[in-house]
Image (cartoon, rainbow, N blue to C red):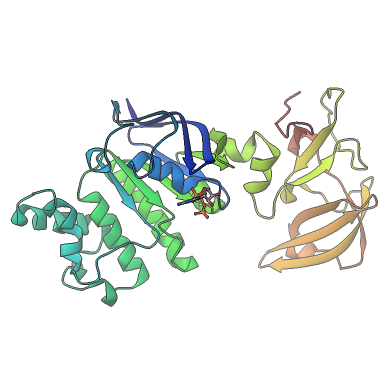
Length: 343
Ligand SMILES: Nc1ncnc2c1ncn2[C@@H]1O[C@H](COP(=O)(O)OP(=O)(O)OP(=O)(O)O)[C@@H](O)[C@H]1O
């Protein structure tokens, strides 16, 4: 059974449509990450599911129930925000229990369930503190416990890790995944961070200008990006894209190409730098990050290419190198539509 279905959902702020017929199905117990750049409409997807914004077209189903017209309080979803939105004057246990108490759960029971939720997310030692006395990571746990305690049909997480520093973010990411696996909850997690999406998700929905560009497992998104947009958005540095009739002729067995303008995509790690028969390129800049180096090159016709090489074998700035890439490591896209071409 589906945990959540968005069936052709459109939404608008005043006269501006920001979601265009979004179709998404999240299975019960699945963790779907909605990934996209700023302004793509990610938060609006969550707000529509939570009932905080009306739809202008389409239907929303939660746990098999059509909730398109239902008020937020009747949807049984919990939302976790980037800002945590904890009440500063309440203690941790009061913050967690709050949502139950306003729904008339007897106080004793609410507190007991709050303690159990705090236990689940690892903040049981903080129950009597107030939010001002907590670190960012601890506040995040409390916000998660508060969402958890209501046993919602769907968890909606809006960039919940983006206020944390890099190390804590990686740690909380792993914990969030473990929490998901433990409680088997249906979750929709919004982020613009592709690493977070690749690590966390069962499936990723890439959103662009209010439209779903591709939905797939992290592996599918990485290995068979459906468009140049997805290809460039997922991966850092971004995938290289060159005209197929340009100077770079990949090596190995060539596919039969359709007779229309195409782009060849290949990731920085697919570039071979010291190929005997390769295409000449100039090294503009080299960045070393630990064991890896990224060489920023320009081909003779002026196109930029990024190559990842072991730091110990990095070329010198200003040097001329010969680069190659194997057909097997390339992706093809139609220039006109930007969509993937699988010849
Ligand atoms: N209350 C509002 N009134 C008018 N326009 C809005 C409102 N909220 C968002 N928008 C617009 O709707 C579009 C989608 O916004 P949304 O917040 O859903 O994007 P997002 O992908 O979550 O972005 P971010 O990653 O920056 O949070 C943007 O163009 C934004 O400017």
